[in-house]
Image (cartoon, rainbow, N blue to C red; front, side, top):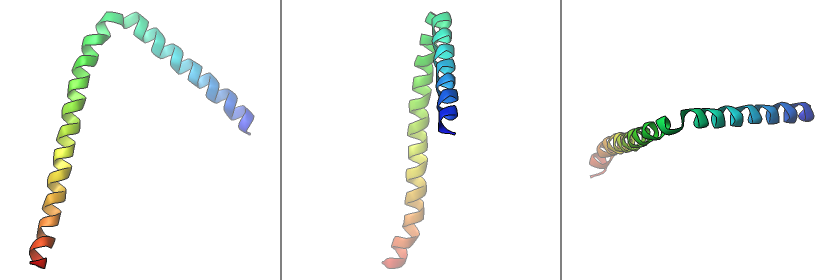
Length: 69
């Protein structure tokens, strides 16, 4: 039933928000340098995956273009 789902969904949201807020409050200054490093790692990973995707797509398209020529 949707009413039961809604209640448990709201309780779960409150639990997650409370946990994340408490962790941020308790870790405070220690989390900022970690997030900076994680941000740069995430940017590097996105660039690497985009490059791999582009190279694979280019490699797949080359044989098709050479057959057409």
